Picture 1 (cartoon, rainbow, N blue to C red):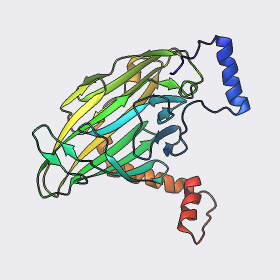
Picture 2: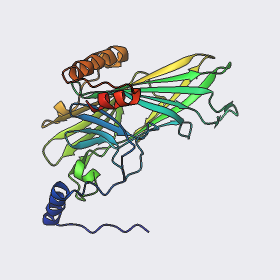
Picture 3: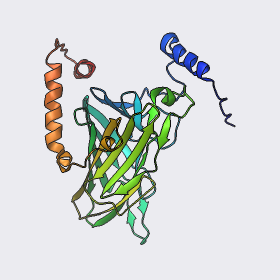
Picture 4: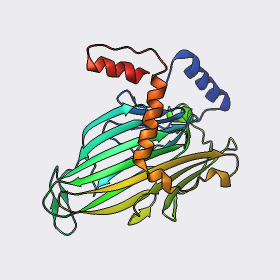
Length: 292
């Protein structure tokens, strides 16, 4: 049985923070040691090696900016099941690639999508300049038959202070509004007690069939030996003015190849400023580059 933690006074909360900062108690949440980490300046994204940010609590994964976790849950499902992870690689600091496939799916019309019939390539980019995480999700049908693939993307936002994420702050610091879906854009909005309003806006290149409680439902009709693509842009904003905290939808954000090229060039220019270390081992070379 899980016991509820007793409420702390403001003085006790301050003492807990001081212990974290001075005595090396980083967190009481589950470890993120195996996380896939993406970073561009002050914009961070951490997820599990299977691409997921679990919708259930008690973890440190998510999308962060200025010590605030904007996105605390993000899961893709095929019908009702998670895809099967095959591999993940962080090519550069702001870019990551996931390879996944499908479990066996029994559809409502009685048809079956057999295991490994669908290949999923999920590319993610974080861009601090535009305060965005941009994604390109490709669904490839390897069979000789057309397929209707049901896909859902579920999101959860709480706009938590980093101390709250670590389980070291129990007080609620602001008000999270219910997610809204209007004009093709899913919006999460937060009124902070620090007089800053924060927003996470999610835009899709294809219109969802439905959006309810932060879950977007899609159905992709994929021809034999063909693929379907979905581009997703998650855009962050913070402002002392409510209206200014709502960023504008931007069609240009769906130009994934151009953004990828620009961020790769920026990353290479940054790394080129420092001393280069090379060895005869490919893995060691990757470790050196990743550290830079």
